[in-house]
Image (cartoon, rainbow, N blue to C red; front, side, top):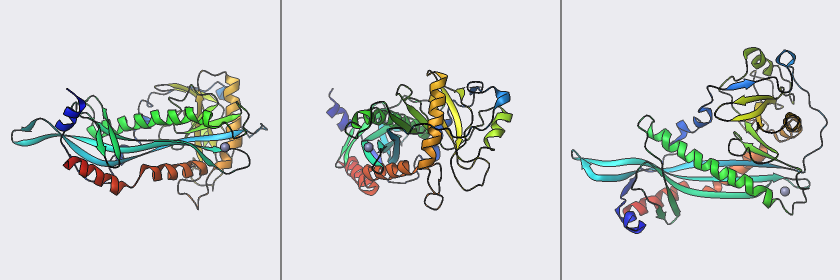
Length: 338
Ligand SMILES: [Zn+2]
């Protein structure tokens, strides 16, 4: 049977556009599997010697590349399942139509932050085994079929599938960024790549950092955790190792900000676990030079200072590239009716 035949057989209905779809579970993924973190603090300093570390003199990177992605659920749809009715009620399963995009900005000497790479996709996220791609006048929503899991809430399952696809796209954007840098006059091997979010999936990329802006879990032992609140602006914690579902070097850094809550302006940075300690420490020192430079101001951004200025600009541009949500929703309705 051809996919066209299947397409003809997949009937669906559109619920409409509601910007809150998926937003309640949007931030749930980062903490998955993190509750059983294993922390090894004696990497840079013995736990008894832990103290805030001041910035050191390190050379500037040739360029700083920031990687980020955005996602938006366009519509909730209902895909009809055989048999078409069960006990007289329509038999349909809920699915999500979403757009997502990832990209990089370059901050190299002599010019402001500029767009380097972007990738965008539209996807149909579903557990329906009969799902096929949905072509619309605004582009094709590619079918992403996730195995059903009775233990998991369907909305969370689909949102997690979307987040995974976005993660893949961010990895692609990050990998392409280095190639796209040719012609920017940056010495090879001198750039630094900063991923907005966990570094998972990007640990194979050289000179790459993950930037985590919110802290729901206290990973460090209580006495070391308490030290983080004493960091002054631009100071960082010693480097430690942490392992959840994956391992990495990590440290905390306080960005310059108006003094307030104990952890105001604190970010966590991550780099791969399998690089030499000296290299991880060099990256930690470099982050103290680079990150504060791009910290946002409170009066310009409510997520300041952790929401870095080039990243905020990249997110705006990526959202613009997702397209007009009202038109996309309309295109889906037309596709459903045809
Ligand atoms: Zn550049």
